[in-house]
Length: 100
Image (cartoon, rainbow, N blue to C red; front, side, top):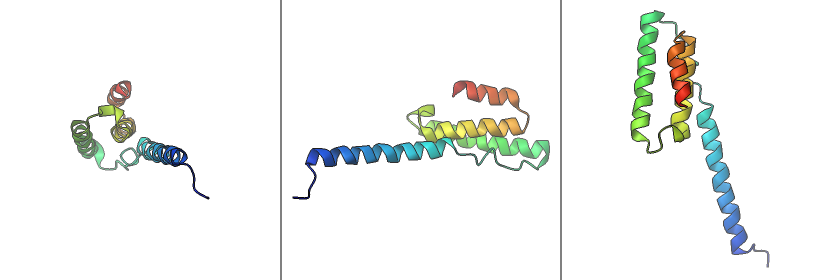
């Protein structure tokens, strides 16, 4: 008395796991730390900052078995596109977004 059937418990646990993963994915896709950078180091300095972001993204792509199917990687790619736009590198931003 007072206990849920095992099938109901399993269903609830699976549903909670899906909801947790969706929260993680949503947070990853909303990441905006790179595009929120101030970029106040002049063109050369900003280019070096962007190159650092590019290296980080390449490392993420290499270590992920899902590539852009991984929400963490996709979120960072979108964030990099925003950083490119802030630096008027519109061709690079477009190239990244077309792959997303």
